[in-house]
Each structure stands twice: as C-alpha cells, then as structure tokens.
Image: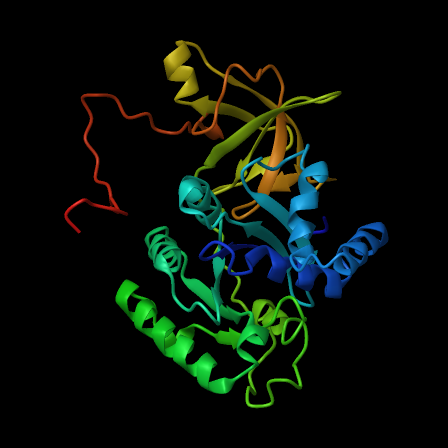
Length: 337
C-alpha cells in the first residue's frame, strides 16, 4: 500500500441485522473493490432470492484473512479520492460484544448503522456508548434500509430525532455527526445520490467518509502496539497483528513484548524482519496502521493477545501488584439498572 494518502480505520457498529455488512458490501462493489468472480457469485445469489448477498462480501474475505487480520473481525481496505480506509466490520450480536470492543478500539472513526424500520435498538445504544468511551471522536450515522419504509422522509426524521437524543446522552454533538439515509441493498445514497430520496440534499455515504478528518498521529511518543492476535504463516513464521497506537515501528528495529518478558523471566525480543498491511510490505508502520509483522526469534508460544510491543530501549511499563494506577471503567450492564 502506497502511503501518499493518509490512512484511517473506520469501524462499522450497530445492532445485529441492521445492515452493517450489507452496507460495506454494496459500497465496495460499486467502488470496484471486489473481484469479478465474486460479483458473479453475488448475482447468482440474487437470482436465488438471497437478499443478504452483499453481506457476503465481508464473509467471503475469510479466505483472504490468513495473513494479518483476526478471526473475529472482518477487515477490508479501499481507497477514496482523499485517503485509504480500513473497514472494521464489528459484530452486532450481544454475545460478540467483546469483539466489537476490539474492533472499535482500533478505529479512528465509526459508522453507526440503524435500521430505518426498527429504529434505535439495545445494541445501538450500547455500541454508541462504547464508541464514545473508547475515544472515537468522529461518528457517521447511516439510517439504513430506507427501502423498507418506502423512502419516506417522515420516518427518516423520526429515527433521526431518536438518534440525536442518543448522541446527546452519550456526549456527541449532533451538529458534528452526519446522519444519512441509505438503502444498502438497493444502493441508494451509498456511493451517489438517489432519486428515490429527493428530499435529502446532503452528501452520499461515500462522500461523507471521504470528508472525515485525518486523525492526529503521535509519532513522537514511544512505540506502543497492542497485540490483537498471533498467527503462524508458512514460509514466514510467527506473525503478530495489531494497530500501532503511538510511535513508529520500522523494519530492522529491535523490539520487546510485555508483559510476556516479565512473565517468562527473560526478554521476548528481536529484530523486526517484515511489516505488512493488506498484503503489501511496508518499511515502517505509523499510528493508526493495522499491520502484521514478523520478529526474528519470537515464537507463537512466547506472545499472545494483550501483549504490548515497544522498542527495547523504551519498553512498555508493566504494572506489578504493588503499583497503583488510575483507570476509566465503563459498566455495560448492572442487575440494579
């Protein structure tokens, strides 16, 4: 991946079955980011009456996810006029909330997808609260499945009003959050304006994503990269994956993992041999980059999800039982609530 354009991670969040994967699939297909043979497969599915065919864009990426991404989250990269965007499709079902947290924690911005027919649902509220708690400052709302409500402006305004109340409740400023009507399945207002909603004069969904502000990159701070998962790739070896939070990691850097080193009683460290993002080799990784990388001498059994990588001369701090620290804790559910 060339790095002339800025790179952003955008998480798609929302209640289960509100159309997150379908919206992503439609956008990627219309944008030309899907192989021709996959498009033919979707057309065949459409003939069989499978209305969820576009969601298979993300599901079918499982074949491509052997290098550098997780099993629990679907990732896909595409390019707009102004930036590269890595899409993180977060599970909407309550049972997978921990994976949604993982996805949102990697994001620079989030897209909240709401079903125009159902409106705001329990996981809608939970996901917005989590996005805010995890520090996601930029939010876009797609009121999806407008085809199910006959593209009526009245219903859009009802759900929009309901959404604005929720945004205010969790601390977002509604005037800074674009709220867009879409029909992902029919492609209305996804990559271009729709004549079925002449009452909406705002930007299309794709145009709104392209207008997101580039996040600040704390490259001057110590390198910190939380490990999200660890893979073994034939011909490469152990490949940890994760998102650079601060600092810069370069090929040839000497790095160390904590608390793995403290737990094992010996340094789990080595030289960075390769760095990849979306199957393309990079000389370095900066804040916001989701990368897979190989460290000489570090095996899969040495590290695990939750370890943090840093430079050997400025390793991540390890908290011991005698230490104290301040934390922000978000309670998602309580029996007395």
